[in-house]
Length: 74
Figure 1 (tube, rainbow, N blue to C red):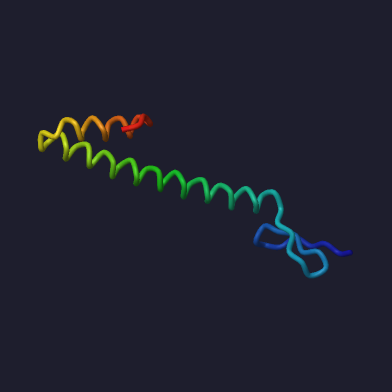
Figure 2 (figure 1 turned 90 degrees about the vertical axis):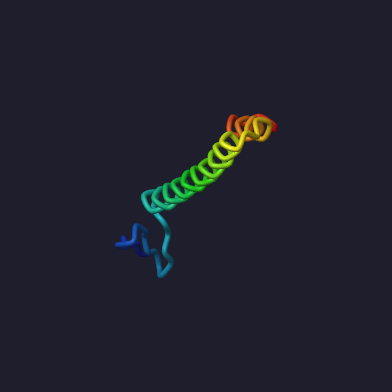
């Protein structure tokens, strides 16, 4: 069984690419960053709803949006 390192962060063993810890951690890191960005977009949209409700005087709706932002049931 022969093993060589590959430029993409994996080891090649008899023609099969085996990801190294470094390659796996970069994939996991990218997934975490994507999730963080998605949560940020959702919170920004929720803040816009809250702001709009406050500006238009819909206090009950604004309270519901604020509760959701805090993780409480609306």
